[in-house]
Length: 120
Image (cartoon, rainbow, N blue to C red; front, side):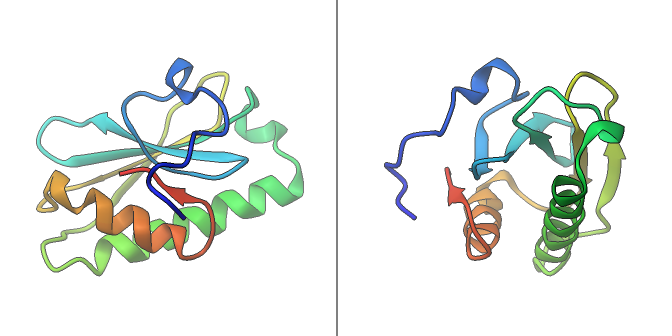
């Protein structure tokens, strides 16, 4: 994992904000949630939630669960609100109060310990 590594594909065309973490299938990006810290986990390919194959659906659950555990173990963290945005791509949203944007690097690195690349 190096911070200078190039993105796998241009995620700026579908990510709502700056990319925090990514692997070959998933992208975690920052989104504006007003006061809370907002993160969006998106599938790289345009597939709806019911269209994911079993492996990708399993990955979605594992990554989402890891991300919630990472965020909830930050000292500033409150409860993580989890949501889903309907659209052409699978998109899970995570919003939490109390966590400053400066903690994005910690979140990305901890998620990258399981795989993928931290981008912040």
